[in-house]
Length: 202
Image 1 (tube, rainbow, N blue to C red):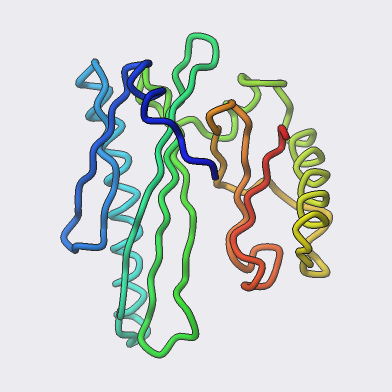
Image 2 (cartoon, one colour; image 1 turned 30 degrees about the vertical axis):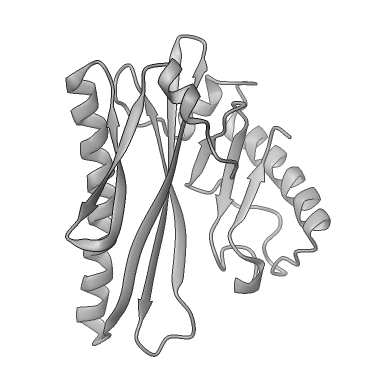
C-alpha cells in the first residue's frame, strides 16, 4: 500500500495521533475530527478491533497451552474525498508469534469510515463509489486483476484458488480512490507469496 499524505489529511480536517494498549508493541491510530460524537464513534471501533485481536490471541494461547512470545500492531491511515463523503481508510497490521512456531502470523485488517457519520463502510459501499459494481461484477473484476497481478509478480496460486468464491473481507480505498482487496497469508497462495494486495482500479 502506498503511504498516504499527511497534508491531505490536514486539508480535509481529519487528524490522527498514536496510542498504545497495555503493551508497548500494541499501537493504533487515534482519529480527530470536528464532530466529537463522530470522533468517539470512530475511535471506539478502532479500539474494539485492536481489543478483538489481542483478546483472541491470548484466548487461543490459553485454550491450546501456547506461550505468546510476541504480539504487535502497526498502522497506516489515509483519507480522501468521494463526492460529499470523506473516506477514512485504516490498515492495521496485526502480528503474533507463539513460542516454537515456524514464523509469526501476520494479518492486514482494514477499517473504512465515513467521517461525517462515523459509520463503517463495508462492502456495500463499493456500489456507491467509483463504478458502482455489484458483488458478482466485483468478483469477476477482482479475479481478472488478481490473475494479472500474480503473473506480473510471479506468484503461484493454490490449485483451487480460482475461480474466486467470495470477495475478501478486507479492502480499502487508496489516495486515488482506487479500491484494493487484501488476500491474507494462505488464503489463495503459500505463505512465501506474502499478503497479496490487489488494486482493482489500476
